[in-house]
Image (cartoon, rainbow, N blue to C red):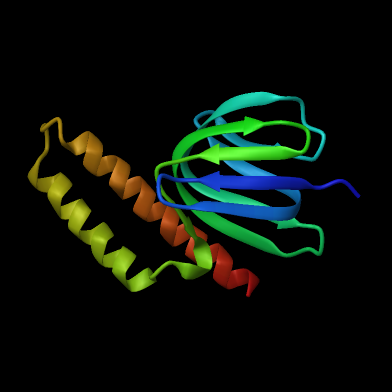
Length: 138
């Protein structure tokens, strides 16, 4: 059976996933599924959760802060600023950060800085979703 190699690249870390049978990416226009043999493409990624399904039926979830995916028939390379594996996310800390961001957004309504805060808010929500999905599969 064919499989994909997925390479997750951030400025600090390179993670390689082998034996991926199906990859689900969040894009600005919705979710996209990638299978082995996919036509070459470069696609924009939204802040959200990446799901990797493996040959043996296992699944892994990653919170990503958006970015770009380069797709070839055998490999998907994802370039993102931040990527965190769902089962390694500290839920308590993430919920505390989320609450602080929400307070800051309320205080800075109309301030151009709120765009940055909203991106941080979306990434924190993606982290909690990745953590939740990882716990359901454990």
